[in-house]
Length: 299
Image 1 (spheres, rainbow, N blue to C red):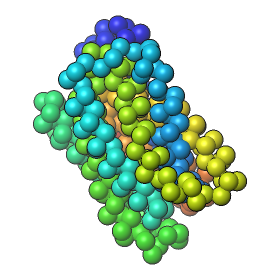
Image 2 (image 1 turned 30 degrees about the vertical axis):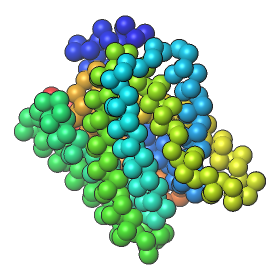
Image 3 (image 1 turned 120 degrees about the vertical axis):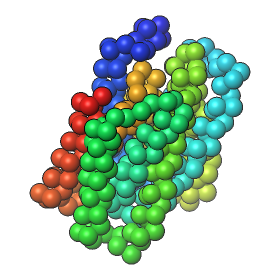
């Protein structure tokens, strides 16, 4: 499978697969965010997810894929540090704000900075129409967040700090998207990078939240672990999919397409978390999707 995937790099078929992976990652990332926010403590939810995907990734990293080349270890160290900061900021934001407010701000901040980062690191450029599409998408995402901010009734007293944390989290989304893309492109075997990424990335949150786990009532542990296993599988497909997309195609385009996840997040917030929706939010979600379509069609 590795040889087949590498053979698609730089081809039209590879670009088409990258688009499909980015769109799938958008849906799955919205589900992933809802799993972390959910009814449990978001710190413990993320720790359960990380522990699950670390356990699942370990045999593949140790016994299936080739071992990383020496030059990959410093890259893994940088990736680990960036993802730690992202997780801490995200959990802090989710602890203070409603999902349908926090999530769009996080995702709206990411694509603009990712496109700039892809230009600096990979020399990728967007034409004027694609930049217009980015503007449409980002305005729709922030419009959705502002609308939710006006109408939401839960966590009102902590929404302002939640929004600041969401913006900071979005900046780290852009950073990890760009650096992860650099890492998976630097690896000879992309699946080596993915297996070791998930193994190394799984370490921090379970250790950091150990005291919270020890204070948790026993009747909640089983539910959290079930959520962790589901979230781990979703993470493989979501994070793994977007990283493969950035190896096969444009980092900037993949990042923009992934941010259509805010549309799916709004639907999840309404269907699963009981958060309100309405025609204005539908219009804003349409704006987000339109921006992504413009970026892709203008490529």
